[in-house]
Image (tube, rainbow, N blue to C red; front, side):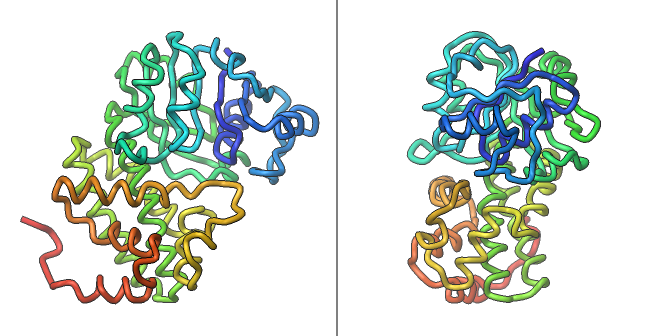
Length: 328
């Protein structure tokens, strides 16, 4: 079987590398002709994943038609471009694995909702979990959630396609929960980076992770997610990873904000996208609309927008009224 991967950024290239690790053929789509040529000739992706020596069974292409005929396609484009990219894929039946984490600006839609409209003949699944691209590409042990809209029948097809000795998927049918975990944790990772940039210490970061997880749970449950999903790999697991290391683009963005940079300065010149910067405003809008208390998300929005400096925003959070940790 040949597997398609749409998007040759760090995460897309790492997934292509993982899928090719057993000798499977992988077609990797990218926009940049120069990058496609480098992957096919030098077996490297110096722009997004310079540490990887890419397997010879990966073939890169700029022609989306080379992917459109495949039965299994992993979609790893930036969340805000998902609909546009999928519109060019055609409407052939296939398993479409969504690997982008975010919420669409303007519409407030999760990626599965965007994909359902753009690729209505596809059966959707969401692949999400604690995954740094360079570790996946290096073959280090990784576990992810594979949430299948098609239930067990789709899982039975996909588990053999996706699983590798070092890359272990776990089944779920909670697509909403898998998507919300991945989207919200990006925003919370920015907040943890801010804590680091302000040198507020490990106690503060641990508290923020715990309180941020409570916000993720409130938002997820209100949108129909299962609590167990959010307590798993694609929720708490991914949150802990991305809130703990500068290998996370979102954490690095937050750290720069905490050190005094503006959002424009911190984001300029970056090859990769910190999805949390796009997700935070729309997530805050949805929470406000639905009456969901998400003070950490609101704080991130204030810092990103330049409404107030990071230290002032943190002081405002610390001055909030005292309350019970677990709401009745």
